[in-house]
Image (cartoon, rainbow, N blue to C red):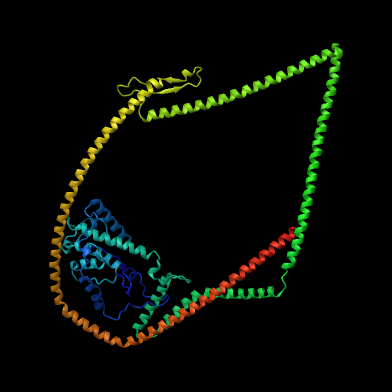
Amino acid sequence: MLKPPSSARRSTINYGRTPLHNSTFRGSVWGGGSQQPARTPLHSSTRRTSIWAGGSQQSAPSGSQTSKDPRPLRDRQYQSKMRQDILSYLQGDDFDISMGTLTNIQGKDYRAIFTYLLLTLDPCHPFNENAKFEEQFVPALKSLKYPYAHQIDNKWLAAPASMHSWPSLLGVLHWLVEVCKARDEYLSSGHPTLQFAADVPEEFDQPCDHLTLAFEYYTHSYLVWLDGSDEFPEAKQALEDRFAKKNERVQRNLEEQTNQLNELKMELHRLESSAAPVAKLQNENELLRGDSEKFQKILYQYEGRKKKLIDTIASEKAELALRDAHLQQLASDQARLVEIVKTQNLSPEEVIRMNTEHETLSRNLEDLKQKIEETRRTVMGLEVNVTNRAAAAEEALDSYTNLLSKLELFPPLPVPLHDIDLTLEINTGASNHLQLLNGADIRKVIKPTLSTIAEMKRGERAEVESERIKVDNELDQLTVDCENVDQEIEELEKKVVGLNEQADDLREAAQQEALVSNAEAARLERELAHARTAALANGMGVKSRLQALQFDYREQIEKVARLKEETVRAIMKNSNDICMFKQEVSRLLGDLRKFTEED
């Protein structure tokens, strides 16, 4: 027997909240207050009749009656995944269950799991443990807006593990588990729409935060009103304290800005009452600027003169040193030549002729050296060009070889080209240009062979394309046949849906007969509710007057807040203008001080 945890049935107060809010609403409305039991002005049976009993009798929308479950419920792998998801969630929530229970489930186990998931989603659901589970199953699914509730048959619950019923019933549990996961994720998200007063920060401006505090106020006031009191001082004081705490920093900032404004006004008054030193400083600044320009011009002229003199002195010194060296060299040459002439005993004419021949030979030698240097540069340029072209040729051959490898054209080629070798090699060290390429002739052998191979590939591609068109035609024919079969299946499904609707009509007729027998009991309960309502009508006038006073109070609060906001905006605008003026004056004074210090 499955044992749900003690937290499976959580009793909370439902004051207009959704089932997601009900599971987390606390009895202690204000922090630190004592918990009060949940009470409503009407009997619980009357409330349940008005919400659930009447709602279960309403028919689902016409669109849901014909909607089909798109999930592959009869797929074994999908069923295994759904069982694993259900087991993981229930075990994570301390629910005593095993995979064997879901594999071969019994009616009581299915009821225990369904009841736990239902009460997890909506703890206030009027689920009667003493009534038949089959009678409460489909209404409960409709109340939770299960989109495929019209496809569920109550007879399946007698043997839930049977082949025809278990996929749909397993899909119901998996859908409830997914909804529970979404609910838990929403509750743990901290979203403002959860309306938890503890999550509202001290300073807030979001509309959801205002609504949260308003809801807490109404809840606490409603509990006090149920005790017979028409005054709510504690709730009002708590709400006022919360908003006062919110406005505390704003008031403090307002006071600081007010003090700063007063100081700035005093400083502005002092500056306006005293004489402005700006005019005098501007005159002095103009005089200093004129003197500075004159001084800069004179300094520039002297700097130019100094630079020219330094360059002239340096050039003169260099030229003097060169001339001293040349003079010393000429003196030494003259002494050497005089010694040579004395030794050789040559006439002056012979010396002149020898000097002339020496100069001619020197000029010829220089010309030859220049021609050799030019020839060397030309040879180096040609070597670089040859190297670049050889590298480009090698890259082209590498690309050609890679293409052969990709196209599978390495020897041996298919018949009748098996005797041809399309590979090429380059020999950059060959002295003859005809021996640079090793392999077959490009023009006579390789190019015609490649043309033949390309023509063969075009023919094969045309054949493959024809085969593809043929296969596409066959696939289109099979698609048309499948569509015809799908139409026949849809017609059969429509017939099955019609039979199910007839069965639902018969079942509803049986339920109508059962409701007639309960009409008298419902009438007596309505009379009792009417009597209680009449007893409580005397307090409605006081409540209406209280609401009118609350509306007036809110209007006054909004008016005061609006006036405060306008005042704060005006103060902030004036403060901003004063600050900008102060910054501009400070900047000008700083620039002036900086300029005077530089001068």
